[in-house]
Length: 432
Length: 184
Image 1 (tube, rainbow over the protein chains, first blue to last red):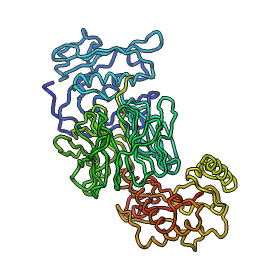
Image 2: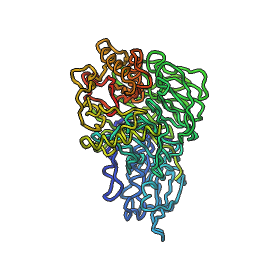
Image 3: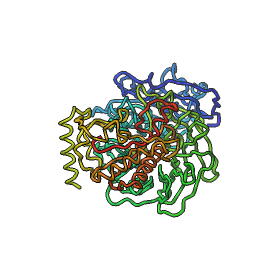
Image 4: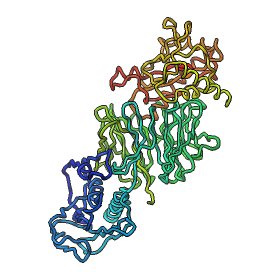
């Protein structure tokens, strides 16, 4: 991968709308890519044998995933005769001449039970060796997911990081006076409404195993924290105390939630059981606002927002109590902290002048990098591999979702057809 | 508590039946959210704030309700705040004082103070700021004779703006605490 080309041009690609087939899964969120990685791996993706017969072709989804990451450049795979489907059929000279460093080939064949056998291989064009090869048995409804898994394998082999194409995101859509809590694939396809309400919904948070969402609903005319199963749809109010209940954050073991309650006066952070049982344990004791708790990946530390020093800043504390430590010092408004998945940095929202932007601060060096340049950017949430941060952005009075790579180079905008989208949270890696 | 809630549910259903049709299917459930509120017979009128989205439970207007009499200071329900402030300004103190007096005379009446903020900044931090505004009103009411058990404070943060625009005028309107009585 030494010959990665440097791309300095900003590119604007409208992808998924063009790739969606009639009858295939629809995207409510279309993703526009603005900017790209410094180094892009040139990859040729050859259409799989017999994929034309599928309701959902595989390779366009793989190509869209890899392109969206900003880390790959698609090399034209057309006009090669015969089309290679097996390693022995690859004429490496052709692909070297086209500048490809890797080539993806594969095939689809129907299985007796109605499913499809989907095989793919990732070949190193320079070394002429196989980097990866997998076979999947997938039902027609799982074709997109299979394509995302293939993209994950390619991403991991060529970048060294875990791929997150087969993950999901949750967010809130406001349509008129109606609020919908939705879950969609990471590429915006297959949006499903898991809760619709005439009252606001905010602060959705994924359980670590991806099977439940905690969120704050105002349906009872005040903020109450619920946990809802994505498997059964069943839900339960887990914090419904006098006053306001909000800001749920899961412990990494999925058994507890840090929440903000006002039952004892003021907004303070408590620990509760995720099933709502037992009595809340109070974690902060200040006369200030303490809110937006977020667990470290090892479950030992909490980040939170507090105005105990006169302006909202980010603090850290041990989950077992003890001293708190102020972490942000630049500016008068630093809020919404989120640990990176490796625990080495945190994302947050920083106000600069009248603008609110996503920033990342390294724990060791305390260096802050502002990653976005919108006027109102909110609610940052890391992808589970730590490479991207999804966030909400106010555009012309309407909210959209956007994502930025943690080095600030790759930017994406998710545009919704209708409605105001906010409060995104990127789901965990899950075994399918 | 269970008995009170059951009673409230019944009262709520009755109110829903006797008044104009409510917009929402579960008008009765609205009432049971105010803990231990005791239904006062003279409070079943429509919402005082058309911009707020509280669901009306009935419209049977009763003459002589000081809470609804436009000539009474008790019909004023909104306390406005400066940016990032929870200080009750002098011009709004008479309103808070009047409601505190009303509560101190009518010990069975329960109220809820709802804090709101403008749209700028973190939703959760704004929820906490709105809570602080509601708490400031409650604290003043207590000092003036209302008891803590009569007042629940909650926050809507930036989530239920009365003014929808994104300008200073709208932000000023939305930095607010509203005093609501049971059934409103």
